[in-house]
Image 1 (cartoon, rainbow, N blue to C red):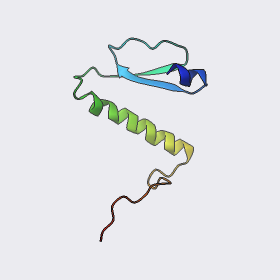
Image 2 (image 1 turned 30 degrees about the horizontal axis):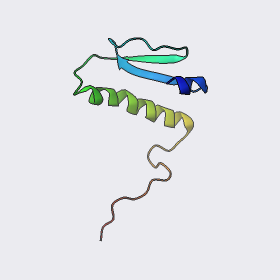
Image 3 (image 1 turned 90 degrees about the vertical axis):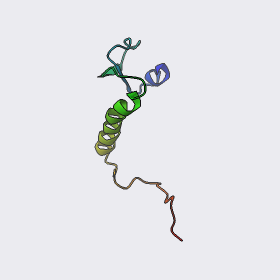
Length: 76
């Protein structure tokens, strides 16, 4: 995280409310609910997917047809 911040990149930390505050300036924190570690990936996937979607929309990227997407299944 410190390397990204040192290069001027935005750092967004998604963590449970009980996690310690991040060290360093310019780090944004998004509080997520406290939950069991087994379901945490499911809970955290939603805000990460929304972040990726809105970032792509703001950049003008076609979210339905990403470039360099190769067809991985072929029917014979």
